[in-house]
Length: 181
Image (cartoon, rainbow, N blue to C red):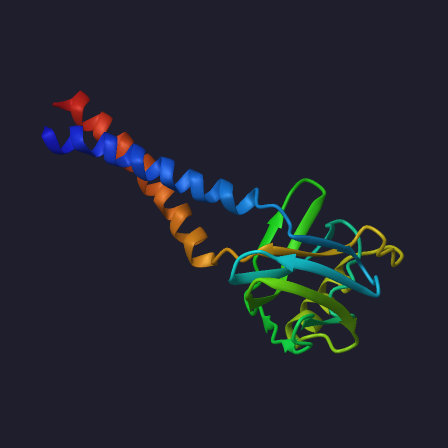
């Protein structure tokens, strides 16, 4: 009987923590927003950490995915910051807008410059070819942009979703167990 009574607050705690993290992933604000094919974008990072480069745009139109590459340069040292390709890209989809994480990078506080080049990653080429094949219509990339967000590990998102499921189950079993006994 005590086990069932204990499952309710533990389930609620797990449920609240999971919802808090899931909401955090979907409501993070962009550090920099640059329209597609603008010459360059300059932005400042305040804290050291891992960041993501995302392609943002209309999910019902052909995307420029796979048609461009990006280069990130530290403005103070003028050295290129290595961009790591997202092999299992994270995506956030709203009703019309969608964003897809293309690259991640580690950066220290400072000013950075992002520049387009014609060297897309292999994964971008593959996903871009598939998406352009599936979408019909003319190529209109005016609604697309490149955004920089703090990187959220997909492992935490995966654990949050399962935490939500287990939290609901624990609360339900706790209530059911108290009713039956």
